[in-house]
Length: 280
View 1 (cartoon, rainbow, N blue to C red):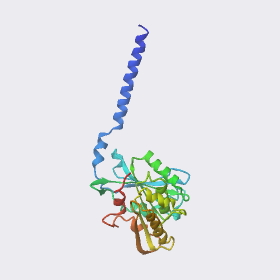
View 2 (view 1 turned 45 degrees about the horizontal axis):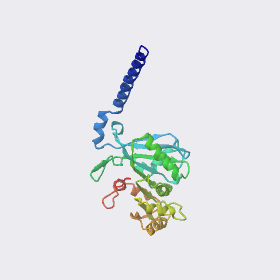
View 3 (view 1 turned 45 degrees about the vertical axis):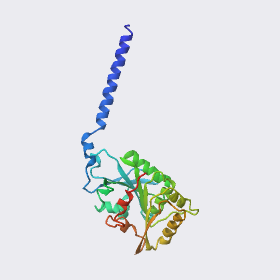
View 4 (view 1 turned 30 degrees about the vertical axis):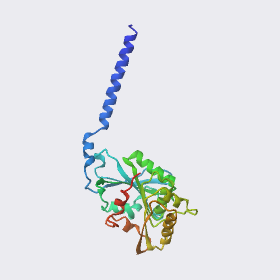
């Protein structure tokens, strides 16, 4: 009996410590002040900052845009990955600002990105991650970026979207075709993948991938015929959800300035509102 009592006392003491520790830890994780902010509607422009952190062998850094109240909430947000063109490749550090010249990063940098987007009576704000690539990235590398974002930021895993211009447009198509279970919708602009056997086109069709693609009619870098033919090929597989295609009556390669402008709408929706219609 004398030997049992010390052991019993030790067990009880250990149990008390465990309960106290786990209780304190739980309390520390739940901040009622942050939870109270979860229903607040964002009104201030999102916060954009450079992050010089390698994600994989093709990405040495990225720009991150988070909702203004991000650090004051506990909720998860839709993730939009913005993929740049071939002329903006770089080391992700000293070259990183070059990706601010076009598309979604430019919209954010200029303060024109909508802080709040209401779709189907729900309010949304995006986390936007814009990586800089040193070369043409593989779909698996885009997935590693998505997984990195899920690990480091409060991402809603059911609302992961891709948009890209030129090279980034082609990569958007490829990644959505290779990982249709992970991507909710895509907006490829002025770029299509090399898909000689059209297996990726078939994957887009078979997996009901929501697509809104853009191109300028008189693109002198990547002909608009490539986008038209690719959409036609997808449609040949009788998709349950046909791709949406916008061909601007315009010259040159830059279809992304118009497409990414929140003021540009078709059917009452800009690309950000259109994307948020879809989730996994």
